[in-house]
Each structure stands twice: as C-alpha cells, then as structure tokens.
Image 1 (cartoon, rainbow, N blue to C red):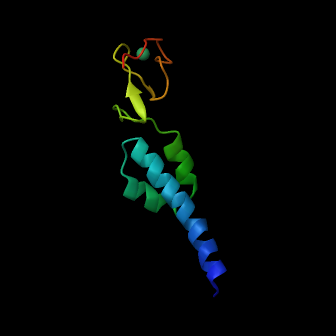
Image 2 (spheres, helix red, strand yellow):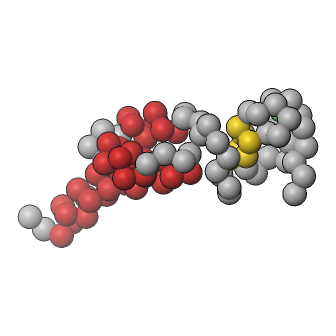
Length: 87
Ligand SMILES: [Zn+2]
C-alpha cells in the first residue's frame, strides 16, 4: 500500500475522530471516548454536535446567571432570557 492510501485512511478515520474529540472537549464530555466512537462511526460527531453541556465551559459555553440556561460563549447576552453578560 502506498503513502497516499495511508494518508487517505488516516484522514477518513482520523478527521471524524479528532472532530468528535474536540466537540466533546468543548462540551465538557470525555474527548477520548467520543473520539474513539467518532472515528469508526462518524454519526457520533453529529450526536455530540447537538449535545449541550450542563455546566459552564470557559471559552465554549456560558451558563446564564439569570435563567440557568447554557448558551454559546461568544454571545453577548443570553439567547433564552436576554440577560446581558457582565465581563
Ligand atoms: Zn438566561
């Protein structure tokens, strides 16, 4: 087998694995477990993509002090109750 095939296989299984691990990390889940699940079964990437963390993950998700909902870190206000972020 040539180098091209190895790179293709590494990209085919590695990309969803890395993506699943990174998404799990940003959601406070176990990146190793989700990476290993996502590599052979890329649909796990979609599952973890729609998962919301249940606690604040600095840099990724913020927990609203007003209503307790978890929403993306980059937003300036809670998208559920409108409470502004005090940075
Ligand atoms: Zn809120």
